[in-house]
Image (cartoon, rainbow, N blue to C red; front, side, top):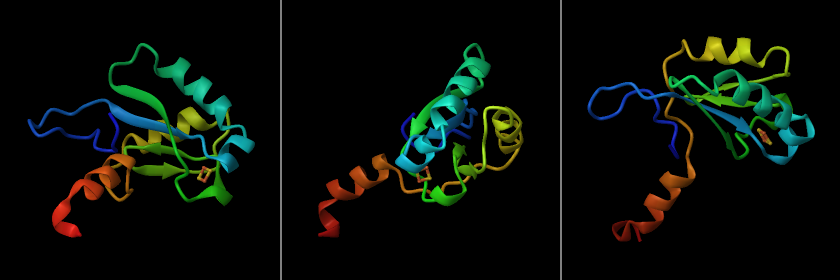
Length: 113
Ligand code: FES
């Protein structure tokens, strides 16, 4: 799933929680790749969660960051990231981030130009 719309599909069925580890430069420098390994291992057999990467979330100075259904969790480490993610999975999904897919859709709308 490209966007942070994991919570509820049009048919009302809840999809897997969308967990994305920031792989922007600052978060990578703060070892976000290790978070990705931990989360992929934790959720590899869990159909209720989907783990992927994302671009910079804009919170570089308080990273490494993980986006969970649009809720950005900060100050993660391999030791605390699962706890942070599990808490964020209890929060309402957020739709505030502008995704690549949303930008692509806007670019293709001729009525805006
Ligand atoms: S690089 Fe991760 S929030 Fe900017």
